[in-house]
Structures are given as structure tokens and as C-alpha cells.
Length: 138
Picture 1 (cartoon, rainbow, N blue to C red):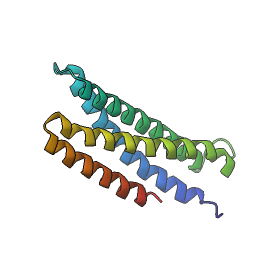
Picture 2 (cartoon, helix red, strand yellow):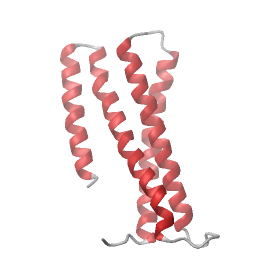
Picture 3 (cartoon, rainbow, N blue to C red):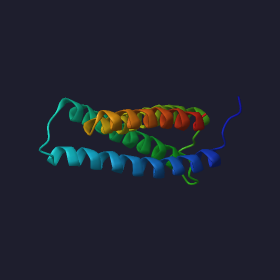
Picture 4 (tube, rainbow, N blue to C red):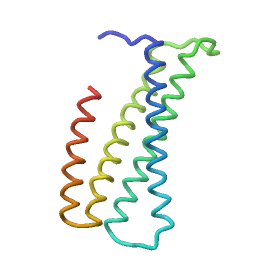
């Protein structure tokens, strides 16, 4: 297996931080809307759970990638080896994928709050989106 250069890893981490910042912000906005909403229901509670989960995973990814950027920036105070980056890479990748799954699940469930037809539409679109997104990550 080929090791990824620190420069390449640094650039990828920067891109993931931008993506996670936007997706975490979106998820947090959904949570904030549910917190001030007067509407109650089991389905809405599940959507809020998935929105909170997505926001949490994206924030974990954001800080994992920040750790990688700090360690791969020239002038970092300590000597860094590829092994030192294994844990933040692993945590970042796993939480990024779980964040995407949570976000797509939230979007898929959202249509069911309106009607059965809209629920089927958002679920099909969500499954298709998830498959395409995960296939692009490989």
C-alpha cells in the first residue's frame, strides 16, 4: 500500500473541513428549527435525532481534519510520522461517513411529514443519493 504524502493529506483535510462546516451548519439549523417548533411527533423526533447525530459527526470530522492540518503544516513543533496521523484519519473518515448517512436519513424521513407520496419520493432520492455519495468516496 502506498503512503499518502503529507502535502496531499493536508489538501484533502482542507476540503473535508469546508464540506463538514457547511453540512454541520445545515444540520444545526435543522436542530434549531425543531427546538423552537411547537409541532410534536414521533417522526419529527426521529428527524431531530438524525440531524443532531449528523451535526455531531460532522463536527468530529472537522476537528479530526484540523488535527491533521496542524500536524502536516510546516513548522509544527513536533516531529510527525505517518503513524501519528492514523487515529485522526480513522476517526475523521468514520465520522464523515456516519455524518453523511445521518444527514441522508434525515432528508429521507423529511418527506413523510407531508404525505405518503412525498415520503416515498424523498426516501428513494435519499437511498439513491447515499449510494452515489458513498461510491464517490471510494
